[in-house]
Length: 83
Image (cartoon, rainbow, N blue to C red):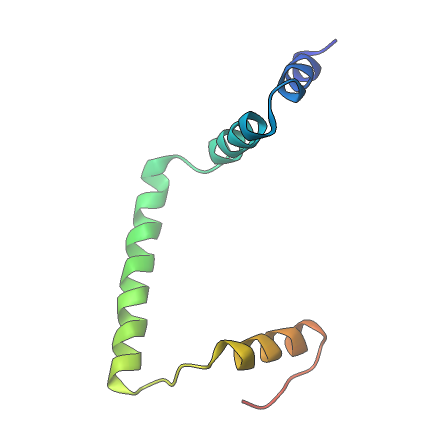
């Protein structure tokens, strides 16, 4: 039996809560090293601040969730709907 199979067999013996925690740790381990994401997080923080400033200045108008959802679903189905 391979190492992967041994780990899987052992993991399946864990409780659902323990398996979920293990799965989360494994998925997190696939992410890029922290130093590579620091710039991304800073860029997103800047983007968020700019978007909030645009809303506050009236440059953009927020779209209510039901309308946004309708547009997203239409686009996913290949239709473009007017705003």
